[in-house]
Length: 342
Image 1 (cartoon, rainbow, N blue to C red):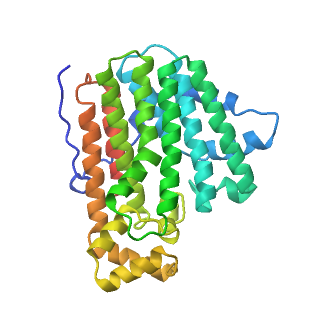
Image 2: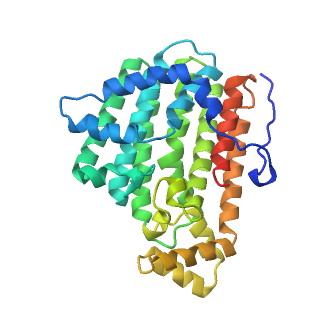
Image 3: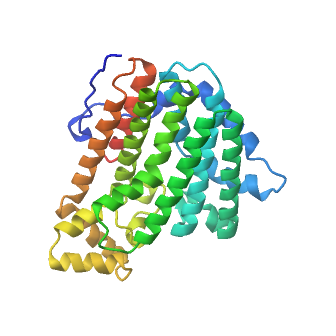
């Protein structure tokens, strides 16, 4: 295979149409119908609350980006089987379960513009249905018949849980550094992106270097995606994000924009951040002051720049694969993840 180079330009310098997930959606439409059928079938239960609560989140307008990455990666490899349908559904169940648990831990009110399951049905039900979805995901992994894919996704589930615990123990700690922050998002977000891509190479029985390339693509895309999410929490609104603006600020999360603003701020600014992260400054006026500090220190610009850096690494990771519709869609998915900032 000969590598091709694709440069990820800053969206601000590109006046053309903004990238979207539409090419990937179109690419995987037929496969996604099969995955959705699996999801609907495996959400069923004799306990009515389970499909009701799970369906509320699964049907809540999510992009289904992770299972689409499994399907797109399989097309990149010209895989002609059907195992990836089961595994893509397993990936979506893992993701949905983690969202249910996250909303309980964070006390979130909105998810994709809708009330969260924990607000409607309560925390115990959300946690238990999340556990149900994790169990269903493991059933699907076993049915797919690939011990290696099972190992990858089960290990990833453990990594995600570790990342969430790491984030929990880091909450309201103003001394959190960039390295630990990257460890957290690498585990809680990027690990599932990476696994979703890599398992396509496993079921397609492709060599280790292709597995590694798809793993790197997903991992770097996941980091870029989370960096942008953390940045737009300070520069967007609830209608755009589908969650309350400033949630990270009120929860005392040391995301990269805050880490950079704190490191670059004056003594007075640092005291504000310490008070904010420890929960003593959480009004709307405080949030607006935080946004001003973040902008004044160029923390948002530099967070977006880092997202573009990881996005470029994702694109470079699949340079060696054959050009075509699948590769183009995967490149544009990276461009979309970064362009959400603008």
